[in-house]
Length: 291
Image 1 (cartoon, one colour):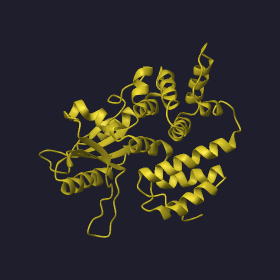
Image 2 (cartoon, rainbow, N blue to C red; image 1 turned 30 degrees about the vertical axis):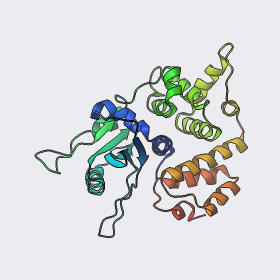
Image 3 (tube, one colour; image 1 turned 90 degrees about the vertical axis):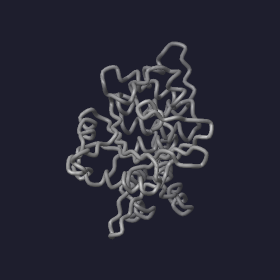
């Protein structure tokens, strides 16, 4: 079952697919022109045999209406040798679909998993083994500048998820909180929930330090709710926002019926259970099936 930590980078990509291009731009020499469009694509790779495979996400780059680059994106939190068989399939299927330069990108939130993921797969084309592009702690920058965080809030949030628990990570988390606080209400709620669900005590300490700075006036009331305990109603509201955002990112809805069910739910634990199901779901009904 997928975790919030697994879904968080996907949600960030859903809000801003350009984040992936920013991280890979120098590495791949990507050119972004005035008519360039970066968007999410179809992440399903169903084979002729009755076996359905779904990647975490697909991002495409279009120039003048033509797809010029495409990326399969996989978020990896643990070692899993089964990926040595599914990853090449995803890349080959997408390559056949878009007929342009195609890459498989692995987002790894720890150095250990990043090093494992970048190891070439020796059983496929032994003369030139398949090797994913890996974005790990060494490739994802530590965003410690307020200006940089404000320019690209999604990068600041991702940086906090990756580097927040490292020595000096409190500053990275602090800048992520500042960046999130300047956005529209829904994204602010969603990004705070990602930080708290993934970093907990580190995020709380960073916020408390931020709010204690002399003459600092925080611009978002949502942040203040996380300092106090027992705000069940507010936390439930944020769970609804993150569930809708994840369903949208994974292209699973929500339908009008599902949205009505989410809005009517007042139980935080039920909402969290639905959130966790999104990662393994292949259809909207999978998220709500048991309830």
